[in-house]
Length: 440
Ligand code: NAI
Image (cartoon, rainbow, N blue to C red; front, side, top):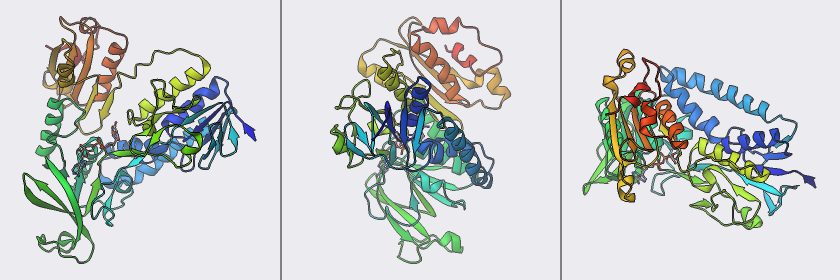
């Protein structure tokens, strides 16, 4: 039987970063990965998507995607070639609470990630219906793309495929897109994308998808009754304000959330888990079995690559008896549409619900010199803080490089700084960051 100090199942951003950090600290690590190192984020998520965002057209995006992914993947493989790490290229299977596929260790981290949650509706398995993974695998640009769900994935793909020239329609069950984002910002982003030509059906629950002959490819008229025929396109059927509506598309992206990757062998370890919610963990990401931890999407807490990474670092610190002050309650997030939207901390509505006394300060990109020079005048910043320019509570930004701007505020919030201290920090002129000290 092989022995390690730490077993990690899954080499996504949570797993591989934890492995490298633990190895550098002197632990002997065995990490299992049965697909590709880098996980969803590197292979079929954040990285390919950002390559699309930064490509001028679909052809360039399709060509560059494998090159970028391959370069990063080989970087991760190099990191995992550390002498303290054994990478096992197979599925790690729990035999008992200390043993995974013939390897034993006193500590185990489960970092198995998540997969796309497909709606259980008729037609979900049609040939031209898929998740973001399948959409990223298309070699031909769909002329008409229908996206179900206006969450993070739906909005990012709507923005980029519209730029490439697809006719994009988004169908969303809720009244507004991006429910986790400040309402003002979500509305501004949707309106901007609408102005660019994306059609949004809000308050519309999709009920089924039917194959339809694809008249656009044959140069014919749009079919109204969707008779079964040559399966070249799909019709997405939904109800809006009591009316049945149908949208025809060459491809349908289902962006209706993700589900944790759990496996029946978890039962051999004895910790609590649920198919829908994932593995139950405490504030230190420890499961109900001591010494077994679950980090990243599989614990269903915050489905973000950087959240997984920081959770992994925290767990390794716990194993080594190192105290850290990572603030999991202030998790910044960004939506990589064009322009970006990003946030950290509670929205205005959440602060109101919590009964927290606060004030809200705003500024607009159109008054910022750098934004004007960049021709990026569409955007706004909202900072919430305790009264009288007190402790910063949250930041919500919509506009070019919103993620970088929110990152700056995240540093202030993490250190417990006030809005006054932010204003007193010298900002280089001219920069987009000045929008922060320009808040009214
Ligand atoms: P999501 O949970 O953000 O959004 C799903 C949307 O689908 C919701 O707005 C929901 O109301 C809608 N929906 C569900 N059923 C529907 C129906 N029958 N008809 C119409 N609409 C329906 O999920 P999404 O966008 O798939 O993302 C999954 C996860 O991946 C999220 O946790 C997200 O944070 C993460 N992610 C983060 C990224 C980032 O940080 N930039 C990028 C991509 C994903």
